[in-house]
Image 1 (tube, rainbow, N blue to C red):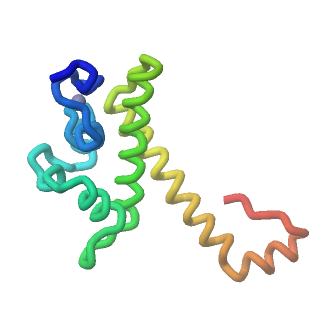
Image 2: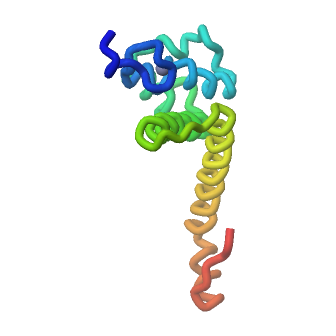
Length: 136
Ligand SMILES: [Zn+2]
């Protein structure tokens, strides 16, 4: 294995997109915090199917909250990898999990705000209050 292809985080495996986002032992620590077990079928899908099933859901099970959590985990795992590789800054898996929870909460809260602001009553509120937006 060429050193340049080795995962910068674990230094044990060849770094591929699949490895960085799902299989690296440091990444698995984050997934396991969300009850994805190490030997789960979750890790055995081809990456395009894996992304599709978890972001778009299947015909039988679509969970909007999970698709948000899944996307935020990918974002934070990739962010941690890049912070380490390019800035030599390390974030623990607990730190990544904490930022996933905080960002997910913010996204869900902003979606709820969007629903409130999209409601017909908002138009009346906005007109009657001189155009001020409600604070969510
Ligand atoms: Zn690795």
